[in-house]
Image (cartoon, rainbow, N blue to C red):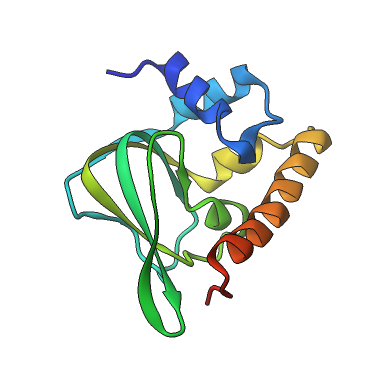
Length: 148
């Protein structure tokens, strides 16, 4: 079983959270819930309302998006991937579908606790916003498409 300290370390490996102090990440991990998903289970569904994210602690997930109106497997990602990062920031739902590939252990991050990480820390907030802009451009470049 992964400890709270290890969860904090995994959170610190997320580029989105790179500017946040480790002790604050450990507090976020402590305030979050663990979920285990079976093979094929959906963690997040595209177009669903929601504002929570899932940090992948172990296992792999498939990231599905809409490309030219059709569902397409975009990536397979493992431990340290933060599913729903955009919804955590924006609070306006999910733009991709994320499904378990095998057994997946996660930490469910709630938006209010996530946003509290950035209270009084403008450098961490600036780093998060800069990362999100770069990530969007990176995805467009890597995939060669405009995601819907």
